[in-house]
Image (cartoon, rainbow, N blue to C red; front, side, top):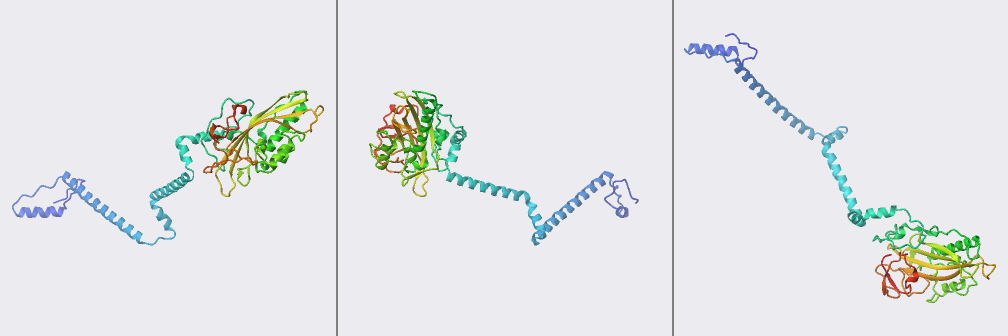
Length: 398
């Protein structure tokens, strides 16, 4: 039988069909009809699909075999990095996880050392502190304030000794004491009034800001500014008080001094807030200078390794006088010490040894026991004449 080439291709050869026809004819049967073109197409498609599956299976087994052989081979000095990078995605993830773990451990350690960072973040106090620290210093005080400054619960540290204090925004040192513009008054010329103001500032600095004075040294510079001819409150009175301090002759009436064997200042910054004014004195040829200032001292115990910071706050109101040397027997370049009142915040009561003694946590109370209601040492809205400074009072804050 000839071939039937209809373009589809038969699944059975011509020789097979011819052999089948002969056998069928010899047996008296009828030869079967040749398969149609559609049947041959279906047969050919099934055959090709079987071949493709077999080829795919051979390829998969080949890849597994090659991978097994490659894993058994030693790393080459060039191929090593490339081979290690084949799993680049998962390697990157492991590195990211390790980095995240290191950051977490560091953050945990920071919270252990400074738990206030987490607490402040949760309570919102960190933003308040940042606002306070970024705030500009307060302008100079020109009149008495009407209320006490707001409270801040933050505690001072060696690095931030004024943290949590209204004094954080106060000016510091001698620059905080601003002298008003002088003018002639009380029969004294403008120049003599200006001298009186300048001498008052020098006395305030030498007795309350000078580092040597704070360390308990003898304030010689301040003593030289006091009138030696004055019988009460003059130079000789305070010189004797420094030598033999007592309840009736206490150097702390004028000088801010701390016992160096007990405490030491944290740095050399003293925060200051206050104002100065002047007016004619009671007699012609006299000028009266009024000073009202609060000084804030951060302190730590003198023992090595001490790190708890406490603050002592001292407010002083005083009157100082200058007389015309042409009319009075006075020493030019000196001041007469007049009325004065003091208020000490965080200073042991009833101790008269010429020093101030701040209290620290867990310290036994020295001197007299506080009995009056708490006081706010930062409240400058009231005159000290309205307070009973002789009372021993606790502090509402320091």
